[in-house]
Figure 1 (cartoon, one colour):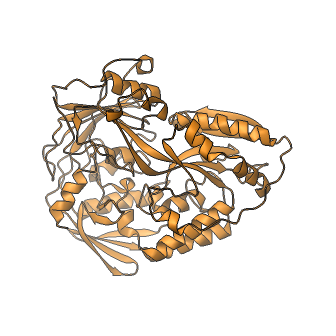
Figure 2 (figure 1 turned 180 degrees about the horizontal axis):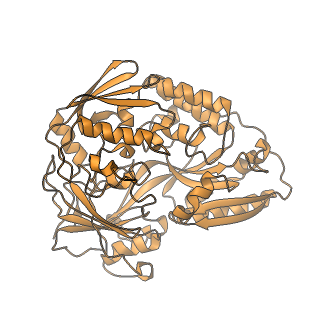
Figure 3 (figure 1 turned 135 degrees about the vertical axis):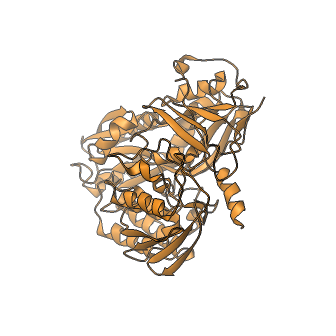
Length: 503
């Protein structure tokens, strides 16, 4: 594929934003037109699920907003199959087992006018490497970067790592202007390279982006996008019905029946709704008690009742959006279940994904039938994440992307189930799991690696520290007069240069 073709594909994969009305009171809206009126300003109104959790730090999950808004870009793009392609890096080569060299694209400017060069890339990547906590994509990776010349960057890892190009595709490793890293916190405002410049962030309510006229690729069709952060799923559905938003992410399944079916688009995605059982808790330190939870789960019932058929029952951690997983899946050898005798357990989850509290209710009923005494703690994600990471719950219900970062499931598995993982909600510290993850990490890209990944999945499942329930689907709302919106299973892209509002 020629470089210009890579450019066009990228602009079909990323997004733009701009600050907007707060959609106040949308949860009360029950009717209204399902076709948004034409916006004479040429701006797109976008309603998003989660507000920024870390002031849009690129080293957090907020980085995926920067990517979806097409305001910040990494060195590498992943194609539909998860294979790396050029973006801000036009080419790369592996010079030895631990060393890679990347050629940096010419004639790219940051939104503050600075030029993209090797020195700017080194500044950005070193900031990510030195961040505490590290970006999830760098879990367990020791990496050094240096400038070879003005257009060449060398990346060297402590161990052989076949996924270096894929890692550098992560939105958490976007390249911002050196000025973004000059203060005590990293600010992406006015510092990206994308088709839209982030000009303002209104806390956790809204953000504003404007078309960047000097973008290195195609000029954006839209003048900008007005974004509102709307955690309430009913309000997001109402926003599409009433025309207050022309593009809505993560529409709850409960709202689908209320919308014109032509405005709703559904795609299987690499996102798994999983129970994380805290193996350090008084109850679930006992594997037999964890096995009780596994046997109590009614996956098909949850898909039909809570998700109204808009999901797939899970057989493992990886679902139908990872097409090779089912064929290579190894059957786990599970431990037998014990008999609960009134043990108290706390289920934690969050309201941002409106189905999860319903899953918690169903799980509570199933566990009480088995002999547990159950309490729930349900909050917005921003207010519960740290408690979950600290092991405050016996069970945490999470909707988790499984190939979000590198296009490879190993990064997710290491982060969530490795003893040193930064997102180890189960508090698991299992030598067998660590060994399986090490083998998967070292395997070369291709069939051997895929088999190692599925072997690691089996070992993780056999601990009963993670009990997959179902695989979600992208349900995205698009107004009738919106064209060019992106439907990305990896949730990296939403709007790009060609997305626009028509008449």
